[in-house]
Every structure is written in C-alpha cells, then in structure tokens.
Image 1 (cartoon, helix red, strand yellow):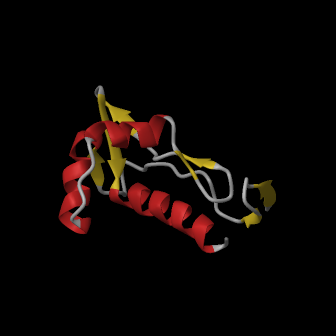
Image 2 (cartoon, rainbow, N blue to C red):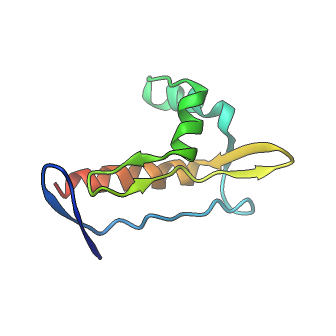
Image 3 (cartoon, rainbow, N blue to C red):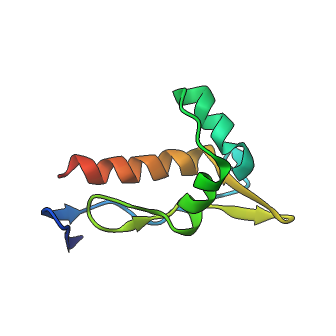
Length: 99
C-alpha cells in the first residue's frame, strides 16, 4: 500500500494499478468500437480518440496514480476487453470512494 499526496488531501491507495488483457478467456472489443459499446450500456457516447487517450495517457485517479486502459494489439488492430473496461472503471471509482 502506498500513501500518495493529492493536492487536496492524503489518501491511502489500495487499488491494483495493473491488468492484462487475456485474449483466450476475455471478451475482446476493438478500441474503435468502445464508444458504441459504452453508449449501448450507459447512454453516454465518447469519441474514439478519448478511448485511445485513456490507453496512452491514462486518467489520474483520486489517489494520484495514473490508471491506463489495458489494450492489446492483434494483427495491427487494437483491442481491449469488457473485463479490462470493468477493471479500469472500478480502479478509478475505488480510488474516489476512499476520499
């Protein structure tokens, strides 16, 4: 466990910050299709470049860590998985709940 200094507060960060996409057991989703996948489940659409930004730059969680969306490339096409998206959103949400 690491204690991080956030601009507003000090939070204990207990979130696991790594996840790997397993192409054999997980449900793959092309990164280009993630905005439509999210819109069908949440009603909120995002641009495909937002998904790529989440992978390359990540999103800063409340604990101060940068959490990146896991992606794997197969034949030049970038994929993530439904499980990776669930882990990523849980990692960001769990960090915010501890605040």
